[in-house]
Image (cartoon, rainbow, N blue to C red):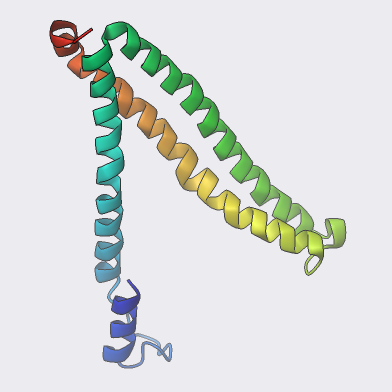
Length: 154
């Protein structure tokens, strides 16, 4: 991404100066971000699928039921915690910026900014992606249930 941005600054006249009417090539940056995100998604998805199938085929339906229950209960609680904690840290920063606890520039504000920096990925990415993980594991278990019933080792 950085290489592409530097290339655009070097090759598109007036871009770095902010000349009106000069437009960067947004599509190339979007393509880079999308392909990077998809490449990072594949190992996590394969791990979720392999773990579900492994538990089902090796230990049977009862163990798969326990795996799904543990996944749902712990994943749901963790997703709720992360989403709410991220929102809380964001609101704490806004509270300090409104003049409370010393306002902007205070030690409380510096701490709140750090908390917001940690909290944004919690509420925007980690919490919601855990909900997707719970769904994927449940769907894989349901789709492969007939095969697991027929071919489970234990």
